[in-house]
Amino acid sequence: MSADHREQQPAQQGSRIDPHVGRYAHRAQGMVASEVRALFAVASRPEVVSLAGGMPNVSALPLDQFGDLVKDVVSQEGAAALQYGSAQGDPVLREQICDYMTLEGITAVPDDVIVTVGSQQALDLITRVFVDPGDIVLTEAPTYVTAINTFAAFQADTRHVSMDEHGVDPDELDRALTEAERQGQRVKFFYTVPNFQNPAGITMTAERRTRVMEVCQRHDVLVVEDNPYGLLRYDGEPEPTLYSQGNGNVIYLGSLSKTLSPGLRIGWALAPAPVRAKLVLAAESAMLSHSTFNQLVVRRYLSTFPWREQIKTFNAMYSERRDTMLTALSAMMPKGCTWTEPEGGFFVWATLPEGVDAKAMLPRAVTERVAYVPGTGFYADGRGRSSMRLSFCYPTPEQIREGVRRLVGAIEGELDLHATFGTTLPPSTQGSQTPAPDLP
Ligand code: PMP
Image (cartoon, rainbow, N blue to C red):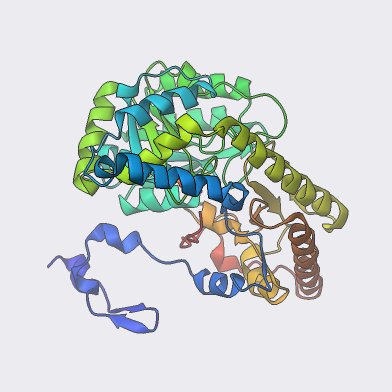
């Protein structure tokens, strides 16, 4: 037993002591449930408007037609659908994924695609294959919470690079890479969500994309481009993918979770051939083979269903919800609050006036019957206390308006407290490590 293991104290798991605490691998120490999880249990009550979760609104799918399609898979391809498959994924589905990616301007061959259990598994496999404990992973600030958790699970040193309304700051990225080189440390990859970022709702401009790729190529650093929201664009023109200007130095991740269903768990990675081969081997040891059944359902969906029209249906619904949220925020938010205006995706990132703590405010908000995700979950280093992620994908427009009204009530209550007692930001929390919330 190592010294570190001996030092581990029995840990509370919910209300029970965990008797296995001395047995866990070091990497499991970073796997902690969010301290706001209990509040989210309350937040899922029907009387609470949740602007917290990032759940796609799958009820916009014609479920009867989908049911017929599933029935056809069983009756016409049942024996194959119920059999083992491969870890790289069904070859016909990989061809269809290549067609799907042409909508993003990507030309790819099926051999370079690996199907994954959502793009989340691709993130896990990539980190498994590239990251040793202590290796640096660079990400935008803020970034996708479960990517932070994945990097932590592999004991990466996650460092952030600031963003503005045009996307990540290429000069700061350059400095972070130079600093790592000076310290003799290699950055294993730069992880980015360039379109309608989760959580900030920001899209990287074309000019920024070119500069980011120039910086990454100069420092010879791999880029992981995570693009689950790319086709959910409500205004403006699509930007070129980083993959298309990456000279083989970009791993591109896609997913059908937001444009079809997250329950089917179909995502993919498009990677240079040697990397793809490693990812397949890692996938084999993680899960042997994919769900053949789900892949055949999706294969049939993509070959028989008007899925491009379905994406337009989703976009019309989400765009109305996005507009409702932005209009409600403009009409009601108190002076000093700011927020992003996403051109697509699911999320708005709101920042409260100086000194007001969005995390400390959450119990008050839940009492007002509205929930959001405090900004701290989206940083690896405890920043983000004055910010919050608001999602508009799941609640109806009426619920969004009411949710914003209640949120404003909570913020005004906090501002009164602030006016009476000074900052609601506890000084000790600046820069501290905060367990991330566990929401998509
Ligand atoms: N990346 C980002 C940026 C996400 O927002 C999500 C889901 N919320 C994922 C990856 C994972 O999605 P999935 O595994 O369902 O494809």
